[in-house]
Image 1 (cartoon, one colour):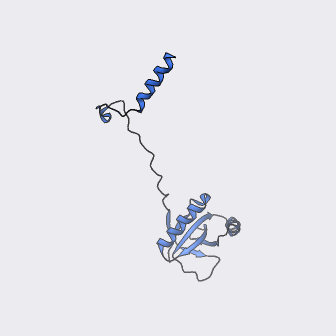
Image 2 (cartoon, helix red, strand yellow):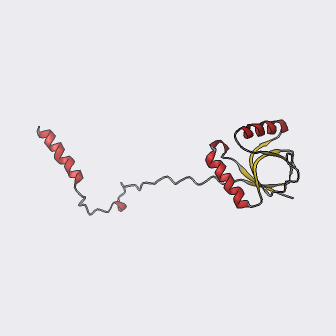
Image 3 (spheres, helix red, strand yellow):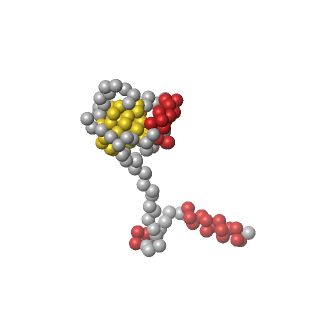
Length: 137
């Protein structure tokens, strides 16, 4: 019984406001808690390329949101079909090096294109690597 009352009285001392005048900031035993930083938004990769649009004639947009790149045209076409099933409206294009790009949006204003990239990244975690292609004319 005495042991229980001693434990209760010592626990009660934790509830009292601190009366120490010791400054913790100078103590070698007190480490400042480092809170993890909120992860910065993933930076957008930007590439400038001369491309030929394969699906649409006379399309003259400057900024394209690229969701996939392929060496083989059939792979790009298959990916396009998958994206259509997910609700995208993809367009295929070919760059000067023979790579096939799959775009899911095109704009003439860079900020609007960047907003679309952010929107896709927030809605679809699997497409967090979408990037911006600036078309050379």
